[in-house]
Image (cartoon, rainbow, N blue to C red; front, side, top):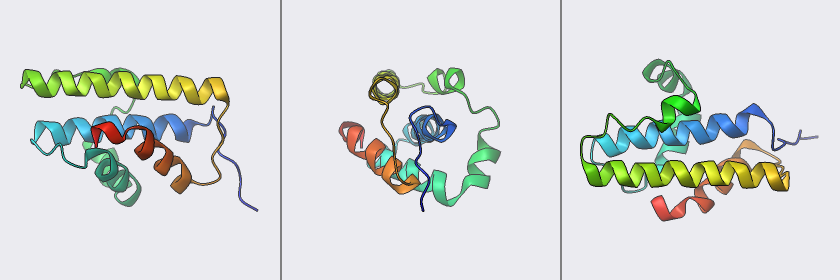
Length: 116
């Protein structure tokens, strides 16, 4: 029997932070197309590489847009940060549960598709 991933599970916030950190990297390299799904794919399939590239993995680090020198990309990234924070708040408020990591990833990708 599969275990539910509850709204307060650390894996929910970890996936959201990974989306932000990896999307910021893609924006810095001027690769904004498909960045949400690519970030989730990279997070799930190369976790060791993600940990190596991002030794500090918390929301404060994810909010830092200083690495983005282009003002338009920085603004896009800050909008993504706000959308992720609102999505995390909605997950907590509604006590959303996920039956698998794939379902969590699909939920994040669907709700952040405007940035993909």
